[in-house]
Length: 546
Image 1 (cartoon, rainbow, N blue to C red):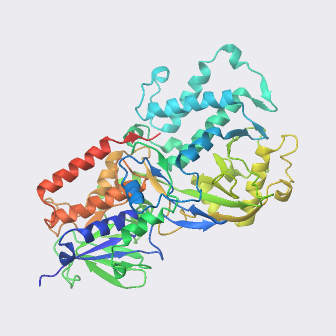
Image 2: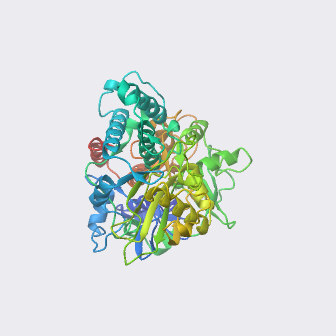
């Protein structure tokens, strides 16, 4: 009997399990392939991780199905009945949107910002993002040509102010130490801080302007999964033999061949994986689904004698890895002490003073100042959720629970109490009126298996870099005389239009599985063309994300 080709998938997240699922289900593949999934952690799911906190189900990582029309994740969730639940949690879909629209925007100092100001800035911000995404013409904002989203927003806000009448420009202070312009800028900052979380860019001045129009979402509602995002992962893994997925198998080096088989490849297989426990595994093909953060670390470590790949990746691929943006986003859950079965903290968006303002309250820690909102995960829940990005997210990872509870308590108090009664630098969190029992936070930045959360297009790169990262090695051209398709790359950071999403990871896993199936002639030409046509149609049916 001919030797079966061995395919090793590195990573048991969405991309890796999708690839393994597709390969295992392909007709005749069981006889042709030996498939193995190696996972460095002690669980499957990757950046999908559903757990419980305060009696509620919460998502530490991926949360949303971004559009339900045509989404493969939505289809799986429907088929396994994961959308059915009698328990509300994580602000399901339209319920979240309704709460968000109805949420008060409060200003530092303890008052609700007037609806007219919030509505005006909200409309402005929506218009500017629609312009950046190519949905509408620039109109009044023509002439502003900037490389980053951050610079475009800053210059457009200034143009908005310049267009106002003299009477509006001379408006007096309208509440305490706030002027109307200060409030407008602070409310605008709420939307910018939310954008940092949505995109993964710690600094919007590093988020490429031109690439924003390439990002796609599916039409329809954005919803969460009541029974948990891990139900999708479990469904993909359920058909695989138990021994196919190996946990606690961290890959520290992948050897591949630019030329004919090396003498060290005693099995005749061109790729050797080295694990942290000293063991090795040889393979014909390896589908690499590690995060962009791990790839970046692997490239940088190569300069100091380490590195994930040996020989190192070609310069074109290394450059793409280093150019692409990769952000750290963390969630903070807190369980509030209830009074009469009612929680005290409202669904609230927070408008902070500028960093150079003399009116900033010193009792609010710096790591809270770019948090856009804090809210119960559903009506009357005692569990609150807030999102953090960039250096604030990394700082959160390093803080102990007591420091987090103290900082959040003082911040929430300063946004919900009368301005004359808060902001005492000596105020203790116990005097703030907000008491929290427990804290749960994600730590994606410091986790060595991820080193961050998801990718974005940074200034200086483009969608072409996603395509470059997705190309397999060795390339089938005259530059290489070696077995083809030794290294294949999947994961959200390898999808040009759906990066940063679970469905982008899903599509990438299918892409690489199909690449191998085509290589071994398991996909007929007609079937391949039909599949590609269907895939392109699904992309064209998508909508640019808001």
